Amino acid sequence: MSYYPMFVNLAGKACLVVGAGKVAERKIASLLAAGARVTVVGQTATADIQKWCQEEKVTLYLRAFRPEDVLEMTIIIAAASDPAVNLAVYHACQPHQWVNIVDRPDLCSFFVPAMVERGDLQVAISTGGANPGLAKKMRRQVEEWIGPEYESYTHFLKEMRQRVLSLGLPHADKQVILRELLNDRFFSWTQMGEIERRDREASELVQRYIREQPL
Ligand SMILES: C[C@@]1(CC(=O)O)c2cc3[nH]c(cc4nc(cc5[nH]c(cc(n2)[C@H]1CCC(=O)O)[C@@](C)(CC(=O)O)[C@@H]5CCC(=O)O)C(CC(=O)O)=C4CCC(=O)O)c(CCC(=O)O)c3CC(=O)O
Ligand SMILES: NC(=O)C1=CN([C@@H]2O[C@H](COP(=O)(O)OP(=O)(O)OC[C@H]3O[C@@H](n4cnc5c(N)ncnc54)[C@H](O)[C@@H]3O)[C@@H](O)[C@H]2O)C=CC1
Image (tube, rainbow, N blue to C red; front, top):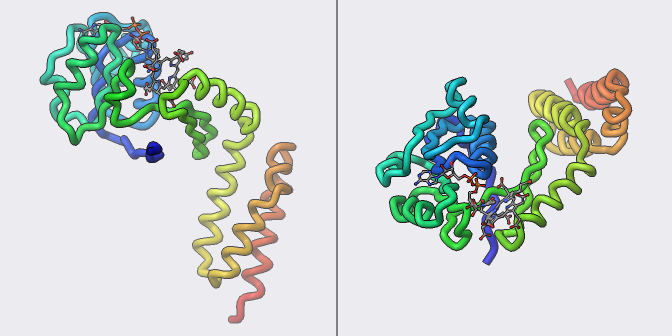
């Protein structure tokens, strides 16, 4: 059996993280980046988590976990250093809640992948718990391959696609233009910083099809 990969919209969703140490901090950072509403319960907290609390980015309770903490939570991550506490978090949860117990892959209903993020382009890497260190190693290799220029390249392709879709062109023409926009020359112009040339060539490509339209 393999795991089902998904990109989840967590904007405004209530998420609980139990434990406020190094591992919790990493998980909280990605929940915040996804726009989740994060509550943290930990007996102690890292400096960054305390700062996020002062900035009102997270709600932090500096105390031991209580089973009622999981109520109404969409996602629960148990990242305490005590395995008995993490197990208690698991037992407090309902079957419909999404649960990640950081020291018990067998009890997780989802794993957190290693991520390469370039604006709208997100590459998630998982080994299904087989070896998280390998996921991290692969992430570093993918970071070399997918450089920072992919953020503006993806943004360019997004804008061009929206423009092409808004023109009401015949389906076949749309497909040809979208395929042509993925030609490497547009990436090369992005990489070389020849943005004006890239945008001009892309506009000309689209214009050619508009002109060919019967009136
Ligand atoms: C099942 C899973 C549950 C979950 O957390 O979702 C899980 C479980 C465990 N991790 C452990 C250890 C380590 N985890 C990392 C790193 C990461 N772990 C992440 C995910 C996952 N870890 C999920 C599976 C993901 C998959 O396989 O695809 C990443 C990808 C994402 C993230 O955490 O954000 C992030 C890399 C992010 C990046 O760098 O890009 C490192 C390396 C390091 O820290 O440098 C080590 C030390 C080396 C080692 O042990 O291999 C232990 C033993 C703990 C102990 O010894 O007590 C367990 C428990 C067990 O396996 O039993
Ligand atoms: N899944 C993953 O990615 C990884 C998981 N781990 C596991 O994660 C666990 C946590 O690791 P770190 O963050 O490095 O530990 P840490 O020692 O930095 O933090 C542990 C946190 O748990 C809190 N805690 C302990 N008892 C608690 C309770 N009763 N209620 C609420 N909070 C409580 C502490 O106050 C602290 O905030 C480790 O025990 C290890 O098994 C470790 C590395 C990676």
